[in-house]
Length: 361
Image (cartoon, rainbow, N blue to C red):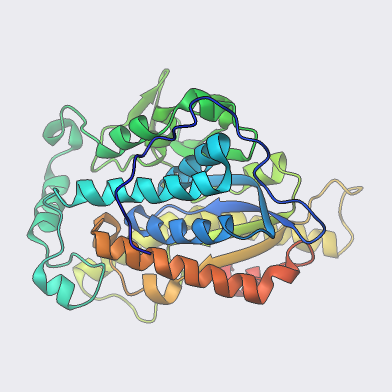
């Protein structure tokens, strides 16, 4: 599906949308956990687009980090002001704006990058200049005015006062508290522009986002995504993880760039692996009868990923918002969701469709 120019902010004003989700015996409720991964978030866009068009799916809660937080926020706002079709339109409009701005950026894939396939910018002069600068200078020096195109896009598209009144879905956004070294979860009552920008704040590109007396970096360092808000604040036991960062590697990296790429993936998967271990531990306690009088909650886990695609892409591709690459990831996201719905829809509400021990432990 090609992206097209559209007005970005909804024309619905502050009008609250009626219940956007389908009803009936055949409808299955799920929660979404959306990983961060820069431009790879276009894969998540494809997943959300496919889920939103399915009349059998209702979504109770969303927890997101970085690109996952942005996708979740745009989707929640669209749901609040116009329902599922408006959420799809706004997600498309958001990624269109990203592509438009990226077309004017020095971060462009070179001719050799394009020849090798969509995604990588390993031979991009702009990427290497930025990479070298970020190793010598901090954004407090080379980006003194803290220019951030994402902030301007979100400010233009979303009325956060309306978003805070959203009743269509529960939304949780993760950021990393720089001084305290712990995760911060913003729920809808705290949702503001700075909270979403904080969740995406890579410290080698942007200055820490200050909210009150605290400063925040990208939420991926502490929770990518944080799943526990869905455990405590959502009734539905089903959690569908949209995973962007590949876990497995076919080989040991040997070049400097390959090593850095693998370290990046391991870092941004570490918190997810810990949460999966905890979920597996609780599930085994319940299975063994140690459920503390029924106080433990059994979760049903599901995953949509494209590890076979993402494992072939380096970290440089996370900064590649080239239109063709975003469309490529969007289509893969839709296709993988189609396949997941065909294979596992009937299991929603009944059982997990991923083996946690095999995949994460």
